[in-house]
Image (cartoon, rainbow over all chains, first blue to last red; front, side, top):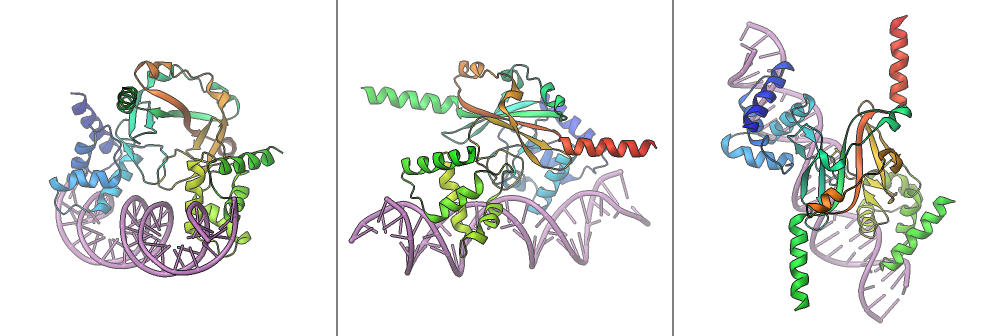
Length: 153
Length: 153
DNA sequence: CTCCGTGCAAAAGGTTTGCACTGGT
DNA sequence: ACCAGTGCAAACCTTTTGCACGGAG
């Protein structure tokens, strides 16, 4: 349900910005909007290529760039050396698991209210923020508890 | 002063982790520890090469990786597609200016106290966090105010 | 019909790896 | 003297660019 809404919203945004709704853009949007794993351009290409034979990597790069420009996507701030994309544009945060390296979404609520007015006082105009947490994800935590148990036997 | 402290601390950390203090590592540390601009590997190479003829880019990559491993450096979470390094390992945050693209350090204090206990409740163990602000930096803000003035004349 | 968007090929940029040698400890 | 660390070259991966063609508006 929510996915469908997102799709129509995304298409509306494209129209409004004068971006033609080409097959490639529609398929890429379709493949991206319900993902929560922050794929790289290559990931997107791999996901979309089967449904769109002849698709070029170049196009994927250009489509992603265009979608970021019109704010249908964002780039995720992370520590690696490749661009990763996020179909969510509402405020939310990320957890990078130091054990498995995975990147998870976290609801904005976890941050409590964060007040950037101190920055405004310094002459800095904050438009948004995103908190990059590092730690251990639920899966890895469970795994490490289990192995501890084993060791104790 | 503080820089000197950092240098000795960094060297101590290397020793403790069994990292040999080679010329290359010392010079790279020396060049890096007082920078606040979050240089890329290439930036580091450019800064260090004059003082260390024959230095290889490969070494720069490997030294940076090693220093991250022993926590003398960190990688900066950001939206680009190249690794950027940060000599500060205390908790602090970043501002990315949407106008000029520059990446600034911000003191931890701007965040107020952020309490990750909600995450702990979910089974997530948070070891640290870093807030990625987007907005307009002081310089760009001033510039835009000035041009507004001009326009009004 | 007009351009914007695409595909292809090539280049540019960033990072990693294998191997032989050198310098710290 | 040993082994970690380095340099060089090459490979590899990611992203960008130029040009010609085709399809969306």
